[in-house]
Length: 262
Ligand code: DGL
Image (cartoon, rainbow, N blue to C red; front, side, top):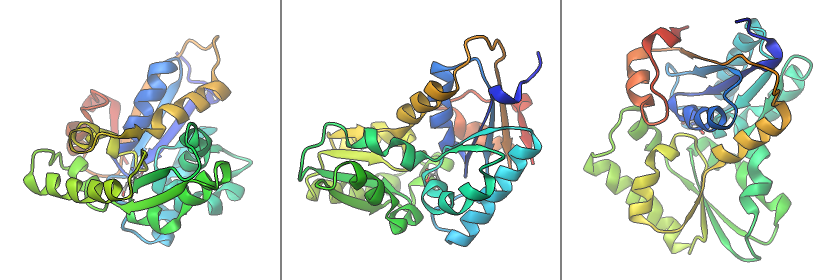
């Protein structure tokens, strides 16, 4: 099978979070060659400075260019919030980028009425950027948005601390804020958080919006090629592949043979 650059899609994230996006894409469009980069050496991104996040993202984009990939999905809210605006012009002739927040904002506001409350659970860097608020309000300026810095959630996922009482306490503390604001909808503003959705639902029963499904549909609408018969999954990480494989399980049964450490 020959891999066609037009049918290759790169996805990037700091770690296993982006697999929640890849799994949605793969479900609805398996006939593509997927190249997933998890920057596990630098995870979490959410506590890093915008300058650091910019550099990590730029390096990964250059890696994708070296692989001749022309389409890249930022399967990461933090890079979409902090690095996309500064990178897009620089890479525009080489790569088509789908930033997460900007791509899904319209869908994320659908069905909301004026004065409805929307809570955004996200990393510190995403919350500080106010990118969600800015993008959502383009489509409905009258909703009330509340950003909740959920620092610590990414570590729960990366280290599989789902049953740790401290993890549950932290999740309860953050969802309590959403409850106080009477959130009608909660946006999973970090691609690691779909791993926690069952815990969330047990603690607070509201509507959860997972951007992964929406961005997958958008990318499919723009890139689907019914004549392409290829299909492959290729994973790259910047640190210990074994940890990545263990944490990936919820969304992908990644095999060591499919994974390369860069
Ligand atoms: N999963 C990423 C996001 O959507 C990055 C999380 C992190 O590394 O802090 O924001």
